[in-house]
Image (tube, rainbow, N blue to C red):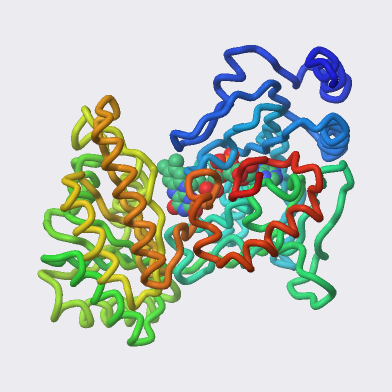
Length: 461
Ligand SMILES: Cc1cc2nc3c(=O)[nH]c(=O)nc-3n(C[C@H](O)[C@H](O)[C@H](O)COP(=O)(O)OP(=O)(O)OC[C@H]3O[C@@H](n4cnc5c(N)ncnc54)[C@H](O)[C@@H]3O)c2cc1C
């Protein structure tokens, strides 16, 4: 077996001073925004595809685990190096290589932050629509690897719908390209889609060709308040059944609304209740028409409903992006733990999912805040506990398990957008079925036969 010092020497030959073994740096790279941590032996910040290729070739030869990392904002332990080895910090490969407005495409390196990309596209009147709450921090590579989504995905689709072409370095160092600079292609297996959502287990993404969209001319918000969260869920179903296509549809239950108000005490929301926040976009005429239709549809079920635009609307969106991370302001003695937090169901089952989550949290006497992208059936359940109390941890694990099983029972998914990582690995075979999972395992084995890429994740050893 090769000694650690020899591996370090080889890494330094490849990446020079962009290699670190300092205990402080290794500590900082232990994990992501979940509570799942590992201990990397080396941190490497590659600058080029060639470097990534040489690193993987070397790691493959010596059977060293390699875990890719974007910004580390993931919530499932995806970039936590649970088998040690090398953490590849891809955030330094952050160049926007091409903005091609005529073809409505961009080519970027994986470390580009989503919001930075959008700030470069805005002057051209374009944007990259997928918008996770973390978009001021998270990288395109991380978003592709989790097939991330966000508020606008109910109308615009998830990351998967925007990736046209990827450059990927495979476990043995080979560099492949999965597509072309075309909007559609029916040439062979769709490897682009295979790598989307693969969580760094099949290859390292070093370049991405993405589709972009024209910015809508106008946006408006509709705020509707309800006495009960499950009734709010019924209103969502009614809006979609009427053929209205909002550009966002978020639920914020009573507790979340109080956190929203704490995030911005000057917020232009005086109402109380469980809130649905719809956004519509398009032309002035089409947004006015859709906004009025949504108000009319909600009114019979709602306590009140009204339309908001301009700076008030931007203030509400800014606060909305902070709620998930601000829950501890409700009770500084408690911490939000990201478990059971990302379930999704067919939209018709939303009221039942809300009812079941309320029952689960109520029975276990554990505070739960409910919010999320309810328009695509995605509910974020924020469970928060005193982390020093082992009894509360027990209840938390039980609650998360029951929430996952409720989603599966309703024909849904244990993760709509945050991914499997380690946090939900045990549920993947159950969700997809053992035969399907064995096909996934065969793909992993064929592409990464030595199992060096992000080992331990998604239920692969
Ligand atoms: C406050 C907050 C709000 C959030 N809101 C949302 C939301 O609304 N919607 C949503 O979907 N998510 C959300 N997230 C989760 C997270 O931000 C997203 O999953 C994000 O896309 C992760 O990007 P990242 O760059 O931080 O990736 P990381 O966390 O660094 O990595 C994510 C995964 O991608 C892999 N990876 C990273 N780069 C590469 C690469 N170049 N090649 C191969 N694999 C790679 C890693 O190994 C890991 O498995 C939120 C997180 C926070 C903290």
